[in-house]
Every structure is written in structure tokens, then in C-alpha cells.
Image 1 (cartoon, helix red, strand yellow):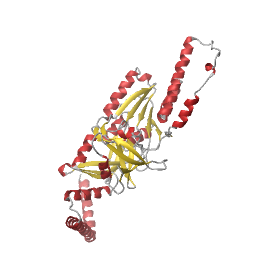
Image 2 (image 1 turned 30 degrees about the horizontal axis):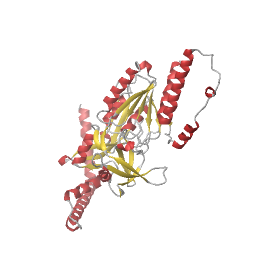
Image 3 (image 1 turned 90 degrees about the vertical axis):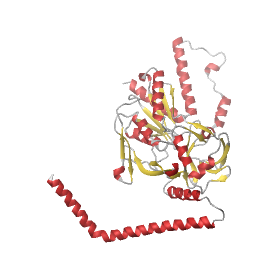
Image 4 (image 1 turned 45 degrees about the vertical axis):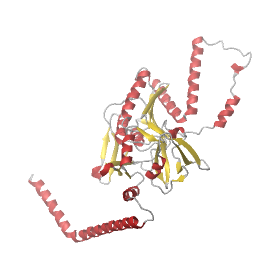
Amino acid sequence: MKKFVMAAVGGTLAGIVASTQFVGPLLAQEGTRSVSVYEQLDLFGDIFERIRAQYVEEVDEADLIEAAINGMLTSLDPHSSYLSPKDAADMRVQTRGEFGGLGIEVTQEEGFVKVVSPMDGTPADAAGIEAGDFITHVDGESVLGLTLDQAVEMMRGPVGSEIIVTIVREGEEEPFDVSIIRDTIKLQAVRTRTEGDTVVLRVTTFNDQTYANLEQGLAKQVEELGGIENVNGFVLDLRNNPGGLLTQAIRVSDAFLEKGEIVSTRGRNPADGDRYNATAGDLAQGKPVVVLINGGSASASEIVAGALQDHRRAIVVGTKSFGKGSVQTVMPLRQDGAMRLTTARYYTPSGRSIQALGVSPDIIVEQPRRDQTADEDEDARGTRSEADLRGSLNNDSLSEDELRQIEEDRTRAQEAAKRREDDYQLAYAIDILKGLSALGSSD
């Protein structure tokens, strides 16, 4: 104990000596910095008074200060911002899964509003808005030069009202207008269904309901298939999922992992970092998992995809994700406002940051655009076979059971072909699980 105390005292003394040697320059630097900050604050006060007294029109002082605060925050990065009392209330409602609007998650890039992703079943989704679209005008007014919050405010309006947004899309030569009718957005966080022997888990957002919806939906689909032994695997569809609550991303990742790190966060001070680990229990009971992502998969979606990929628990299929690898903390302020501030970066279990890089799929599968003209030409031509010819011979070598089996196999093949036309990426994921199941059954 005496040695420990002495070592501590020695360290303290050494610190005092070092401080004494440099105290003059350090105080001078600190003093200079303080003077500089106070001078800048005085400058801010001067400008504020000049605007108040001499601007061509009378200004609202509260709006002016709010704009200054928001400008300070938005100068840091696209995700830091000031939330007015109304915006803060709206955000709290959104995390509960119901709010009014168009149904798109947006960010800002090069002065324009960029669509991160449209949300399933919303007016924006129905109108054909796509991830990666740029919104340049709202009802004919340019959004260039506006803050993201200002642009979003332009897109808000009464439920049932029409809004015209001008879209610039990669691959389209000219901008085009899209009409959207505002509606109340009721987000179902997870939709589940079966495709043959595969359970498809479509996760649209990470809100308070996500994990509970996932757990209940998964159990229901497994039960309808007659038990886990009849399931060949799971597709976790995170396409166009803009993210949401970090806690829910951790729980969804944990749902398929038995152990190991899920994600870590590192802030400005290394001591403030956090590490989140999985707990025992796999809802999929070891069955193979395919995760679908695209350019609209962001934030919490990337945490899940990155964790399952690093642990080799899932095959990630699709296209590169959005690349939002930062954590925002919402801090309550006086008068019911709030501040959304970027406080950390997050890292996948292997230690990689996906900020601005995104998660790269294990298998890159593009979603082809449907060619309506080609479909119409094919329908017009139709398909003919030997059986369609007048007077053709019957096949008498097969029993009724064999013929019925052939018809069932043909029906399944036709359903698979239709699935590839409707959603090529999903069909690809299901085919992977079929292949893995076939390999497993041949052992």
C-alpha cells in the first residue's frame, strides 16, 4: 500500500513540476483564445443589433436567433441541427411510428435535398420516388440555398393536399415533376410473409416497435410453415430502410446472433466509447439468413447488415448501402426545443467504419429497371409448344401422380419467374437459400 501511495504522490508531483514549467505560455494561450472567443461573440452581438435596427423589414428576433443557432449546427455536418419545439415533438411522434407527411427520409447534398429512401406504402413510394433522387424544387420554388429543415418545412402541409416536387434522377436526361398527395404516415415497422419455404422479413424502419414486430412476425410465419424444420432460411430485407433508433438496430442484430460484438461507438473522447454485445438466443435457430440492402439502406440498417456480415451469420446481397456511419444524440433544450448533435462514429465488429463508404454486399445484385415495351412485345407474341399444336400426341408414359408432380413443379417455376420480374433482388436471395437448403439436405 505504501508503494502505491508513493507512486501516486510521485506522479502528482511530477505533474505539478511540469505544469509550473509551462504555466506562463499555457495561460497566455488560454487567455488569447478566450479573448478571441469573446471578440467573436461581441461581433455576433453587433451584427444582431444592426440587423434589428437597420434591416429593410422588421425581423422577428426569436426567428433570427433560432436561424443563427441552426446555422451553427448545420455547418458541422448534414445531420446536426436545431429542433424547434414543434420539430422536437414531431420527431418524438415519428419514433412511435405515426406522423403526417410524404413518407421520405432525406438528407442534403451539394445544396439540394437528396432522398435517402422512400418508406414502404407511403405517398412518396406510391408516386415512384426512388432512393438517390434529388429534389430541386417544391411547388416550383427552388430549395437551393435553404437548410435541410427549411426544405423539409416546405414539403409539409395538410393531409390530403397536393405537392409538386421536381426530381433530378440519374439516368434521366431532364428533371421531371412528380405530384404527391400528403397523407398520414402509419409505419408498420416489420412486414412478414412466406415465399415457398422462405420467411421474408421486411423491415421498413427502426422505431420503438421494430424488434417486437420482428419477433412476433417471425414466430407467426414459422408456425404457419409447420415449424422451423420446414423453413429453409430467412430473408431480412433492409432495402430503402433509412434507419432510426440505435437500440432497435442492436436488438434486431442480436435476434440472429448468439454472441460477440454487434457495434461499437467512438466519440471525441476515447473514454466515452461504447461497445454492445449479443446475448444468447437466435430467433432463426441457426437457419441461413440473407440480408438485402441497397443505396437507401442507412444508419441502423447498416449496423445490422455490418454486424451479421462480419460474424458470417448472413450473406449480404444487393448494392452498396448509403454510408451513414455517425451517431446523433438528441439533447433537450429549454422551451421544449432540442438539439440533434453528431457525437460519435459507429464501427462494425471487425472495426471498420462505414461512414461515407457504406456496407459492400457479399454478392452485388442490381435491381433492373423493368422494360414495359419488351413485356408488351412478349405478351403479343405469346409462347407456343408441341402441346399447342392441333392433333399432337399425348404423353402416355407418365402416371397421374407423376403428371400432377410435373404440374406442381411447373407452377413453382412460373411463380419463381414472376418473382424475378417483380423483384429480382428478392428472387436472387430466395434462390441462394434454396441452394443452401439443397446442399444441406444432400449431406
